[in-house]
Image (cartoon, rainbow, N blue to C red; front, side, top):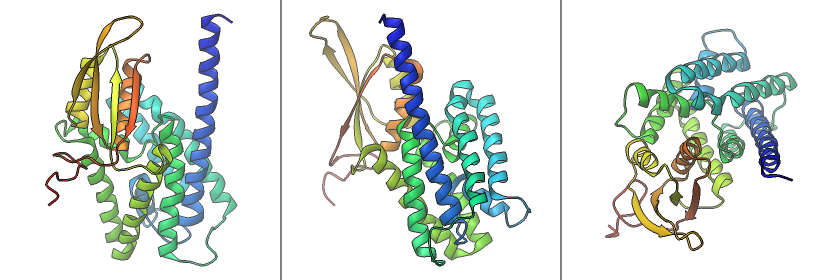
Length: 298
């Protein structure tokens, strides 16, 4: 087998594995929405929360509204962020709402009786597992994470993506409070927290709040600029030398959250498919930075 055939075979294998993860993640997420969230009268963040709010004012099926909003986000993403970003969400834009339609027709509920506390926890847990499977393969849901990127590019270039995302999801949850009541908003907050933790667990296992990324790439300057200006994390450059080639290069070292590491990975993959990225799990970080513990212990 020549190199070209091997590369083609690896690409096909990767595509098949990617699709298995995306379909499984979409099915799990759609099940959580239709079997747990909706039957218990709950809301959430992101497009899910927006659709739940709109259902109170327009007579449309949840899955249909989700399809429409997801397509709107896709089109805006393509126009503002370009084809590369749009390609990362186009699969989920099609597959996930299709599973929503399927489970909506099955009309299945997980809990034997209505229990908002159990529902908020298990929705976050199950939906987080589904999203974690998708994120782990480098895909995006095309929800508020994409909306946050659009806001950053068009309006708030100097604000971190994580802060914008938190504000967008927070705004949806607060709006849910006005529409459904304070209790529903608080349950949505619980679901959002459990969702984030369970998706991180799928991507990284039972890991801490931060990870260390080590990146070796010929596109070092562009990657460093992205980490500094977009992700807004500090960078250390370390000179290294390959033992076989004796070639010297600069390695980028940064510490960030698991979610931010996936964003960095996606950006690196866009620039340099030959890049080498290592993720080191960090138990504790003391120092000045988001997610770090105070070194004084106070």
